[in-house]
Structures are given as structure tokens and as C-alpha cells.
Length: 313
Length: 313
Image 1 (cartoon, each protein chain N blue to C red):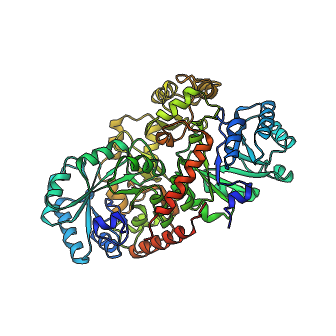
Image 2: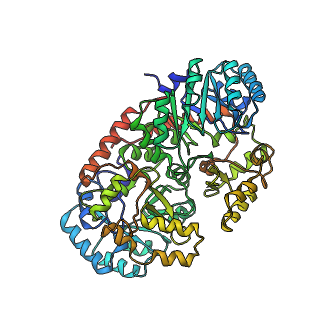
Image 3: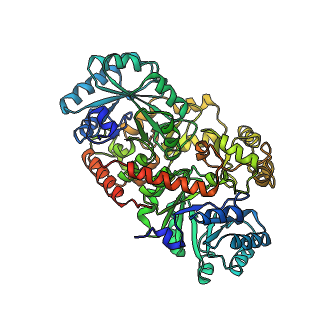
């Protein structure tokens, strides 16, 4: 029997590349899809016409299925949806919002829809919205995250019993061993973010990629919970946030400190001091920049090795 | 080939019951050991003579191996060590301190020693101290915890490559599926705390057990990081702590608020309002009080089912 996620999306391996702002353009998405996973264009950092350009490019670069990740927290979402429909994107991953709003519109056009959640309450909303797959993302994940702090190993066993919808685990999945662990918990596939940030084809700035592979345990922290909770790598900017918290900054002061364009500055332009560097805890276990193809091959090799070495008890 | 943890401790299944203050006396330890796991008496809440009494009782109640968990943060540790040696305890799990201090003293007496850590730095200290096993505990675990917040799925892949010492995963292990996940990550066995709090033989107050099985996602939080970080269940006392943080309480004010005896009051005496209720995130997935034997049987059944359903990819 074929894996549910492979079946659903028409891919070879149940590995979804997380659609990450500033890091996942058409080049990464195409490389992942060509290697047998599912590549996603991260639309969160793109204006609608730029998204259209990336979609056109990814279609030229791969004949395999690909998708777009669309966080539902930006003002241009309706235009993004329009571009996605016009360009015949086959798969959309939505996140950071209510799955009810766009799922039926997309599904009417024959588009497969997955939605990212961080707790059971939103998993049930996904069910009601009739999504094709649910991504359950744990506390250890990079970037925007839930505020309840439920980790992947606690979250997947909460979600699995309440839904029959294909389930994708995210957060802390940086190796084939972790992929196998997610499958043991009941997931049907995995979404991988941080590991792909430090890939050759990622659009992250080279300096950010190098910072990611140098990251150590404890270097990331879930921060700015009063605004939108986001896991950030330690740098001068995050030190400023910590300082602001120590000085009991108000929400307005935090908003002012964050300002605009920090994520682009850090991850895309390589300003490691003043930029916002979004990455997961698993960065501590990433030591080398690799091509997307190598990453997927490593995952599958590690998955198979780990599977064959599991003990019958 | 026999499992390394089973081999090391002479037990049937690589499931260690966490030695938890106020919840794990001789009755729970004996029940777990009799069911084929490794039961631990939690010495943290016991004066030395009470510990001796529990050791004597557990020896009467089981002929199987058992152990004592000894957090190294209390003033009477030397006396506890003395009792452990005099009473011929075969296995000791130390935690919350430096493994170098007592490991060699215990090992000279033929006692097997495991030490609990939450990061790679302390895993290397365990190596230097020549412990027999390392317990790596993730952020999702209940009770006292590391301040770096590394979760089990991120932590085990950090620790596994740097040590050949048998490795036990802790934090978020509430089912056989989670046990299998830990093994997939590279652990040789698991330590299970929260699930055993809500067991028939646990010495936790009945009201606390009922509170644990009623816990929902997001109900626990790692708190009091300025003192000793501890994961607590939401109740009136934790609300007071949160309020104190919102009002920018000093460390001294937090110490005063905590006072003395809160853990006993909550977990042992059943004062759910004013007591400190230590439990892991996985409490959200625990819905029934069961006997230790049932818990271990369920784990092994779930482990085997999950193992047989893992997909070859």
C-alpha cells in the first residue's frame, strides 16, 4: 500500500519542504520536487506578481507536483489566491489563520489543500473545512508558531486519534531518524523547514545559511508571544528584544522595536545583527549546507537504516 | 541481541519509571519492577530515614531490580547516599547536579548509575563521570527541567552522536508510540513520568491524579526559570506566579511566593488551589488512571503495533 501523503500529492517520498518566507523561492521548491519530495514556494514574503513569477519559473524547472505556502495573515491574501488559481497551482498549504475561509474556494478548482495547526482545536477546524491534509507543528519549529508550546512528541499523539485526515508532522524534523519518529507517533509524512534553509537552492542569504549551521543547542527561542509568536536565532536583534522584555516593554514598544522588514533584512539580505533570523531548534543538529537532493537522499537513507535497526521487544 | 537498557539493569522492557517527588514511593516502584520495567523510588521528597523505610518495603514487595532517583540539589544528599549504600540499592538515577560528584562513590559499591541531563554539555560530563546510562530529558517533561528548552525530538539527535553510553529518552513519552519514536531517534530506552503519576500505585493524591487525567493541551507551562525551572499544571498557584511575572516580581519575591512545601501540598495532600502541581505536556494525552502493570502492557502493545505498521519507503 502506498503512503497516504505520497498518494495524495503524487510524490515519491512523504517529505514536504516547508514554505518559508525569504528562504523558499522557485529554485528550492523545484529542487525538492525534482528530488521526489514536495517543494513549496513560500508566498508569505512575496507580492502577488512576484508569486506569479515564481510559479511560472517553478513550472519550467520541474514537471513534478509542487505547491505554494500561503500564511493567511497578510492583507493581499485574496490576490494571492487569485494568482494561485490562475496559474493552476496543484497544491496549497495554508497557515496562520482559519482554514475555513479559503479551503472550499481552492478545492472547487481542484487544488489540494493542507493547513498548518498547532493544537487539537484547529485540527478539528481543519476537519470541518474538509482539508486534504493537516500539518501539526510543534513548539520546536522555526518561525511563527503556536503560543501553547506543545512539542511535536506531545502534539502528534493528541491530533492522531481525533482525525482520519492524512497528518504531516512538523517541528524538529531534521533527519531521517526524526522522520521515522514522527511516523511512529502516527504521522503519515513530515514537513521539513530548517534543514532546507541551509540548502544550496534556498534563497536565504549565504551568511544566514552559515549562521544556521553554526547554531548550537539553546540558541533559538520562541519570542514575541504578545505579537505573533516566532522562534528566533540568538543575535543582536533578539538580544534587544530580551532587553526590552527585561525592561517590561509594552506591546506597542515591542511593535516599534520590531519595526518593518526585519525578516527580509536578516534572512534574505544577510544582516545578522539587525535582522530577524527565523529557525528551528533542530538547527543545532545541522552542520553542513547541502543540496535539496542530498538532503532528501540522506533522509531516506537514515529513515531506512533507523527502521531496520528498531528493536522487536 | 538484547536491548542495552534491559541488559544493563536486568529488566524485561526498557521502560524506566521516573523517580518523582511525592508520587513515586515503594508501592509504585515495586509495581513497575514487578511488571518488567524499572521502578524508581523518588528520594527527592524523603528524609534519609524515610528513604530507608521505602527501600526496605520495595525489597519485600519485589525480587526484581529497582532503583532510587536522587536529585542532587538537597542538603541531605550525603546521608541519602549512605542509606542507598547500606541498603544495597542496585541502581541509582541522579539528577539536577553534576554527575562527577557521586558516580564513582556509587560505582565502587557495584551500584549502576544513570544521570539525567538536558543538553550536550552535561552529556559529556556524564561521559567523563563514567555513568552507566544517560537520561536525556526534553522541554516537555514535567517537574524540574533545563532552561534551554530543547525538546525531546531535537535533544536526542544532539546527544546520540556524541556518546556510546546507553541513552534513555525522557519528556513526552506517554505511550508505546512515543517510546518507539524515542527509539527511532536513537534512544535505547525511555523514562516515563507523567503517565505513572496517574497510576493506581502512585502516591500522588487522588485529586491530583484526577486533575492530571483532566489536563488539556496548553495546560502546563515551564515556569520559575529564575529559580529552578519547573513545568507546572495550571491552577490558582500558577496563576499567582503568572500575575507576579506580569507585575515584574523580583527573584526574591518569587522565592517568597513559592514558599515551602508547595509540591507536597499539591501533589501529596491534594490541595489543587495552593499546591505546586508538577506534570508534563503529555498529561493532555492521559485520560485514565491505570495500574502500573496495565501501563507497561499498553506501552508494549502500542510499541509492537506501531513498529509493525511503520512503512518501508
